[in-house]
Amino acid sequence: MSTPASVLIIGGGIAGWTAASGLRKGGFEGEVTVVEAEELSYDRPPLSKEALEGGASMASLAFASAEDLAAQRIELLAGTPAVGIGPGEATLADGRRLTAEHVLVATGAPVRRPDFPGADSERVATLRRYADLERIRAAAVPGARIVVLGGGFIGAEAAASLRTLGVEVTLVDRNEVPGTRMLGATLAGWLHGLHAVHGVETRVAGVAGVTDPGDGAPLVVRLDSGEELPADLLLAGIGMAEPVPLPGVEHADTVLPARPHWDAARIDGRDAATAILGQPPKGPTADWFWSDRYGLHLEVVGRLVGPGEEIVRWAEPGRPAAILRLDGGRLVGAASVDDANTVRAARRLIDRGIAVTAEQLADPAIGLRELLPPSS
Image (cartoon, rainbow, N blue to C red):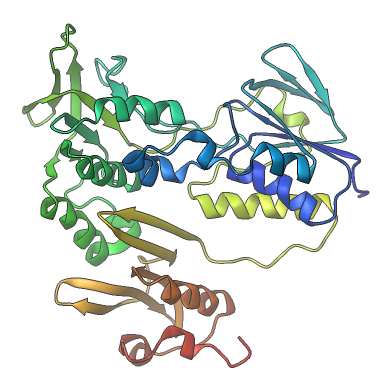
């Protein structure tokens, strides 16, 4: 396949942006255009973390400034979404038609909105866009009461950030220990326990409905346990919905999947750029993701559940420093708290299939980097 003279990328999130910048890094000299529905092409993970706590501007979250875009010769068409795809073209909501020799779609997935009665209230929020962040921060004054629905990464991070802002937070999730299926009981249990330490109340329940009396009166959040919680805002962090394909998306030359983690989407964008350039693909790598809450930094690589043996390195009684999973004499997953170097080394051990023992992994005196071959 010959290298196209122009590439049109629909979607300016991490996957689309990485594809665009990756083309330039790979020596692509043709036209690169990125279409983004929002006002800027910016990073989303900070929305539930440092941006919620510190009120960062959208511009500070942008992948590139106007000067950087000009230097890289990437045209960003922001503020108008694409509404349809045709062979070698895309139509925007304002009626413009854009053409290119290669059309790449990287629109990701929309946020999942709750469907309980009253979910259409203006005081029921989700967190996916910068506009959502502004709405939540407006309600997050000290002493305000916010119910967070969902104890996964977004919900837990938002609860921690809101608590840091002085908000009275109640976290509601149907699971007694959210995250166990992804992180395992040890790590998930410790992380969930941080909420109580920092003054976040928790409920093992779902939301049956919300009543908004208006006139500044508190919301009434009805749990399926029968309890009613007063709130100034309900924030639903319940994951992503199934993507709604753009009309005509089958005409696109490349359609990237909607991946659940930032790094996986980044790798998809990188690989798309490599494929367009006709260069050999890079090898697979273990999934990696992170979370920040209550001043702690968690990183996870590979899988922490399923077949194999869990090995815990304790920083102190009751606090894990690292969680490692061994399966068949190979490391298959690792997590660390405030120790990014351990996860970096673990990722290399996993990717290269290097043999390790339970004794080596259990010994805190042995850094994982020491288990890598000298040439690594």
